[in-house]
Image (cartoon, rainbow, N blue to C red; front, side):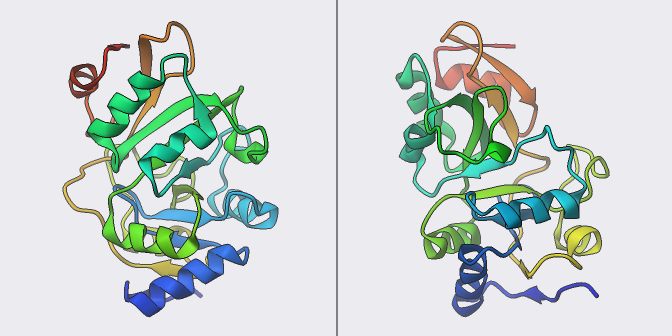
Length: 217
C-alpha cells in the first residue's frame, strides 16, 4: 500500500526530519525531482534506497548541504575561488558539483573514483526540512532507475507510484520554475580551469562560463 502524502506543515516537516535522523527513508521535494532522502551515514537507509529504486550499485547518491559554504567540508578543488564563484551564482539552486573528496569518512555510496557530488537546494520546504534534520542529507530522484528521462520531472504522483510503498513518508512541496533534472557539472578532472557537463539541466553552459573562469565541455 502506498504511503500517504504529508502536507508540508511545520509539524510534518519535523516528523519527516525525525524519521531521517533515525534511519528512515523519506521522499522529499527538491528544486527539481521529488527525491528519496536519507541520512548520509546510515547504512540500512542507504541500502533501502538502492533497493527501492533498483539503482545500479556503481551510481552514487548526491550529498546536499544546507549552507552553500559547506561544500568545503566535503569537496576540494585546486582553485577554490572557481567553486565559490559557481556557488555564489547558482546556490541554492539546481546545480550539482562533482568535486574531489575532502572528507575520507564519507559513505562509499556517496563516492565514485575519489569524487563526491554536492548540491544545495532553494526549495523552501526542503530548506525547512534540512534545518530540522540538522545536517546534510543524501538524495536521489524518487523513481525506478531508468524510467523517467532527464527532461521530465518526478512529481509527487510519480514518486508515490514508483517508490511510495517502500518509503516511510512522502513530504509534499514541489519545485517552481524548473523544467528538468538538475545540471551536474564535474570539476574533478583535468585542468582547474576546465569543467565537464555530466547532465544538462536548466543551468546552461553559457551561464556557467559567465559565472566562473571555466572552459566547459
